[in-house]
Image (cartoon, rainbow, N blue to C red; front, side, top):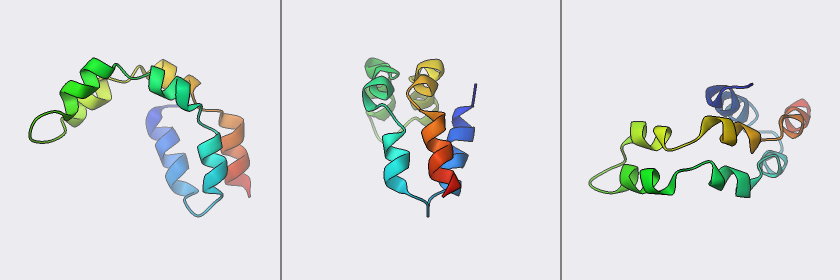
Length: 78
């Protein structure tokens, strides 16, 4: 199972690649479902963003399921 850092790194590495294909690789409904909205709201309310709370508000397994790695690989290969 790829890590979120790995997904981020892959996305950064192909910044100049076909961004549209990268966007298509994410099932936004599944990505949204991976976030605990109450915890995320708590993380972003107040003076600034509590990045640890924001990170903790994401169900990492569900987030990974929201990404089609075959589409990521395709976008990176061009």
